Image 1 (spheres, rainbow, N blue to C red):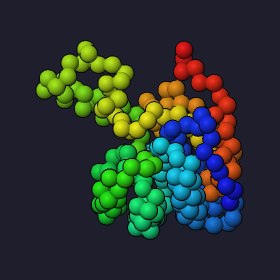
Image 2: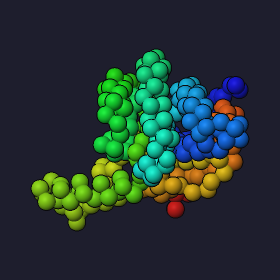
Image 3: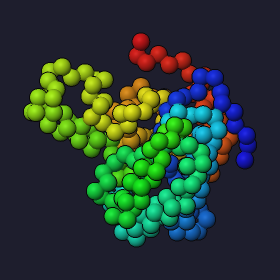
Image 4: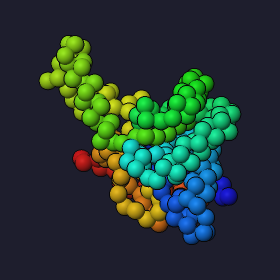
Length: 238
């Protein structure tokens, strides 16, 4: 594992679409869950590295709204993997001063997992370091629709006048509202699409695609992505 230093002009908020676990396992003649387990180890590594380089926010796309349509066995395997992971890594987050939150529709999740995620959020809520968000049962389009519903409720109860709505004030109705602006999205495994990840927030984010499968994504791979970002001139449409 190579050492990585904080770099000038590094992003504040990085979102990662962790893709390629299944393919990684298949290449080794193993079941997909084997790839997901390897992916978890990689995510842990990434969290520790993000703490070291003082990243402000890291958002990991763990499970999308669309992933429910995967084979039942894989989905239930993933859910129990999430449960075990949370138990195992709670102390890691506490020791590293990481604040943990989830984004997505918790009503879709198994009750035990939902409870464990809530416990992790509350245990780490006072932490002041890295803001780690797990996008689980999350979809960007669903998030925007949900925001619109909340906005209509507030309009009807005269909390806000819909005609005064701005881009900035609408963001208060979406997930990730308490995080710095999303600067960089990294997607592994060679796919070059957003797959319903942070659609609103990605309006001006830089995109970085790599063919590396997620379990093979090393600290050097992250270093490369961050340096690539730091060398881009961000005009933000101006």
